Image 1 (cartoon, rainbow, N blue to C red):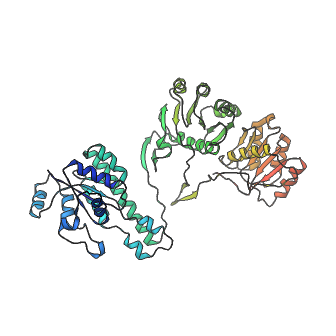
Image 2 (tube, one colour):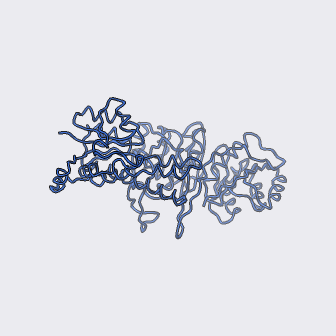
Image 3 (spheres, helix red, strand yellow):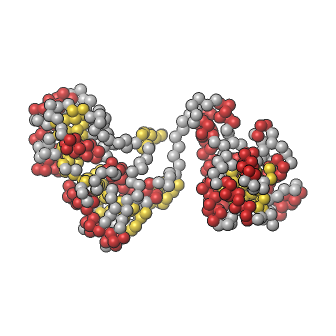
Length: 501
């Protein structure tokens, strides 16, 4: 029995292969129009042009091609309704079981600088969305393919689809039309409308607290939704927030020595680089072992046996790394509740951050640009040597991931003390320096914002800090510079602050 497929696409990727597959099946008659028909005919694939099929010519310069009862009647007819079958018979209409459509490139057109309105309007697809909606509406009987990525699975199943699969394909088609129409409306209105759409990954047990409901959504196939969960309890809302904080820090050190990050309540409590990942983890853990208890660990190198032995030696919530050896996985199995994730790409960060406020939301560019010393300015008589500059950069990278007001004390690529989220900067400095203790002798200090007074410099000097990195920009900068000079410390201004609220 002959079956009809309508193919009409703008993006012709994979189309010839799909049409050849249908031809080889021996039962499909392909209906097509315009450039799609020409392409298929040039490859020797038999095609019935839409105008020949309907008996109506394309009109209005191609604006009207597929808007015809012989097309939409064949798509929308309900196969289980006798009256629908009688209508088709009376009007000499064939059933159309497969619709392959994607839309005019409106986005590409309006992305051109100063594109004329008339040109943009001609790229507003009418027949395509109508075909997609018709086929998607009748998914009980009709298969709709709206993206070239769907062709291979369709062919792998020999062109056979069940209702559940057709329903998912229909959802994709409706979503494509929705996004397309929104884009056109925004363009005509002259507005840049920010929309965030996501697919639910899972309903979480609760949010930050047990009385708050929460759901995890994904907006792309990258990121945490693509992570391989090797073992452990179900991820929680707070786990995911902390994992993202840990990932954003480890992303700073992707191409550096093996690095370990430990996060607690969205703040790093230990970060270290070392010749091996086991050494790096041990240094990070020991920099604040009290806070590390129940923490989230991110590693920029695969989990190997030596580090796995250390990870199971205490209570941790989650561990993420780009890979994990089979033998290390066995060792981690000693802690079955420990959530272990493998995410090969730890560097891809969201381009923007979003925060809800009453009646709306705020969107900003993420603070994820690469940090270097290229534009730093030494403002003291004491010049930092290359080793000190490298250490200052290490502390500076971590500082931008600490809640403001943020102070980081480090030495030899290891954090010694972190002061986070205090309402005054000198308070954060006291916490960081107290954590560092005697190890602060010869260490460096980073501040995410300028130092408004010389008090932080004085505290740092008393603790033995030898160099400070800060944005600069205070009206009292000279007081801090003078204090650093008096103490024989070096100080550099980055010209860029890193508040994190």
